[in-house]
Image (cartoon, rainbow, N blue to C red):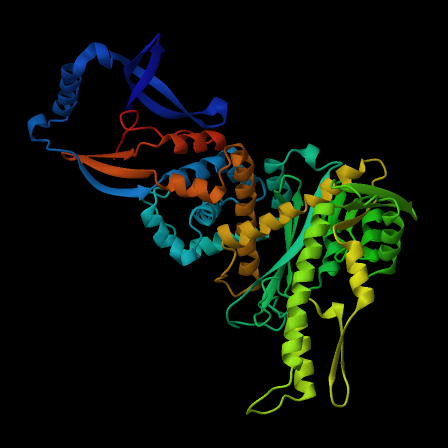
Length: 556
């Protein structure tokens, strides 16, 4: 029960109605929170300040307290509230607790596992930290359901185990909460993989998934795991897979495609990815499963790509500033090529600048050294030049040879001529014979959304460091992070019109506090008043507003 102030505008005047209300959950509305009015006390304007003071004094007398001895209100503590309030309500709006229960993640051994998983995801979005640090984090936030009750560390680990056990059934159910079925049928799916590395070699097993492999983070000195994610065109993950760290990209596709067909019952889906990942065998698998594809061809290797580019260049005018798109059908597939004069000019200028610096560096290395010091050997000069060109990504544009007594460096004219031809070029291969060429190009460029998802996963949600050492817990940790990414991407789409990022929204909402105020011997819990910017964020997300002081104060 609480005191509520309802504002009503009549003409140019605003009237504030003083009401006594209570919150309840309406079973006819699926248990959604509702408010009902118990008594109307009139408007504050008509009652007057003295009458309101007498009402307050009357309530205190009813409790046997002397209003004169109550003393000024005392703020005993204030905890972060706004960000966890918003994320927790979004979780409930999306019905994720019920979804977990449907997949078998239910209460057991006196623990509500769905609530514990919600806690893990809310923490990952609001203030990502280790599971042990999360227990301390709860002391600084006001999270509904965990105000007094604190789970133990092993409770969180048991909840993660339950989550992983339900993965096969749970992922399709969660995906349906974020994406309507219409986006699954006859639409685009994007697939890409990344890696995350580990500190140390603790508890390594014989078949450990933490292995050395190609690191997307440049940490080739660390063991890692490989993560594959399938996303819809809205950038929301559909499902994920965890592979050993030494897994080659293209070997993951067949397993992922068969999983999509089996668990998600997908039909007529167009698979978007890079050609390096989708080998000929993988493309055959896609066609066998009745999936279409849009793939980008690497421009510097492959005779087929070279042949197609040479043929399609004849259809481009090269005399304008607008992007030109041309196409050709070969062997039952469609090739679409885009050429951007602006990107071509920028690429060419950048390359010429890098080549000029490389030429100067080569001359410096080969120049005779005067004065004291050991004269560099031809082998040493050869190694320095090759290392420099390799590090700058220019080795393929030079011919570097070592003779018995000197190093010979020449420009590779054939390679450079080909670079000139492919400046500003994007070559795609697709099974879609009907869509306009511009749409094919646009669909492929949407693959960049998955890259933004990777950045959010590794930065905003802090996928690493991973504080787990067994395969099951590592997989469960990744699963928690992916669910948080689904919610983060959903929030991002809601905030687009406001031009506010999710980290910025979380930071602003964190400034809303929940405080405990003592009036005499009575304790009241009340939130701080939200600013207009914070109210707009809550409305954009669809989260319930923060009740302001005077509208709701919960008695402790």
